[in-house]
Amino acid sequence: MSYKTTIEHTVFRFESLKDLLAKATPERSGDQLAGIAASGPVERLAAQMALADLPLKVFLSEELISADTDEVSRLIAERHDPRAFEPISSLTVGEFREWLLKPETGQERLEAITWGITPEMVAAVSKIMRLQDLITVASKREVVTRFRSTIGLSGRLSTRNQPNHPTDDSRGIAASAIDGLLMGSGDAVIGVNPATDAVEDYIRIVTLLDELRERLAIPTQTCCLGHVTTAIRAVQAGAPVDLVFQSIAGSEKANRGFGIDLALLREAHDAGRSLRRGPEGSNIMYLETGQGSALSADAHYGVDQQTMEARAYAVARELDPLLVNTVVGFIGPEYLFNGKQIIRAGMEDHFCGKLLGLPMGVDVCYTNHADADQEDMDTLLTLLCAANVNFVITVPGADDIMLNYQSLAHHDAVFCRETLGRPPAPEFERWLYEVGLTSNDGALVGAPPMLSNFLSSSSLVGARS
Image (cartoon, rainbow, N blue to C red; front, top):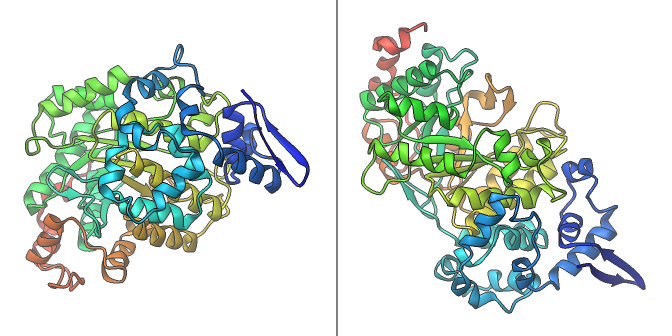
């Protein structure tokens, strides 16, 4: 089916829904690289006008990627709930935007349609929204998850403390984790990206992090961000695995590039739950996505990268995760060229994830060869706080020395708490006060002896392996 619109006597035609969505997408280098982007702002506007007039029901009848060959497409179709879709079934994409922005459309209404909307519908409406629209709607959608801390409560901001080390040195990991804790970072998770995917290293890292958590009685959870197959083997060995991590994408082929499929993800979920390390009903998965991942694997089937990103969220919500985050600027300028594109993509990802019922976080980041800087990250962080993002990632000095990219600093979490009024999870907020790190109004007051002394007394910190 083709689509068209007319601007000043010029007819613009779009040969398919896939083509229409791609050309309606705000400018980004990944779609230009794929050869599917609009030729310029006028064609983009024409596509957005045609998209706004498109009935939402079209997304239920025209596939972007055939369900016959793609298990993500089959999952999306199987999980669609016609009864949840009914309140908005007569709307166009443009009317859906207006419905979302109505003051009376609050948490209850947004939650009610969660399983009635598809990732493609959500991606479509985001393409015709301004940043303030994305903020307005996302800020109304609360998605709360729990393990040892409660993440996602409105008006709060959690953080992942990311103590990566180039060689997975135990001393370096522990010192970096302590550095983050001293700045009040880590209530979402203390999570390490390992330099290798060896099972023995995975077990050493989760054991180190668990001992740190227990010694300091921190109300948080820990994670080694190894492959799910490594996590399953570690669980079988009896390692203290709190959260099971995996990167995911929006097509079966892209996920196979990560060495996974839906069956393996469900197996990993069951393995993590079998340890019963959290309270009953705890969310135990940590999932990561990023615009451009399917394109980089030649697994996008001509679909724009933002819509492919939204399709990854269908995979994520199948696993009832504690945390989901988009590593928005991590893949590089080939996919998001500059700060403006990164900011827009981060706000889109957060909006789409929230509407689909996910506990959405964002790694506010960029690579050193992108046309972006830390002031762009300040802008994105502040916008995300306004939009009620569940969590962000912080590293020492905003510079990840293992992954070699720029993220947020632990100091940025302090800015969010003290200037923007976004305290951490309530359990962690109490812990910070009880150990003497913060005053009763949440401001940092210094380094308490129990944390400072840990650096010199712990055998973990002295470990060289």
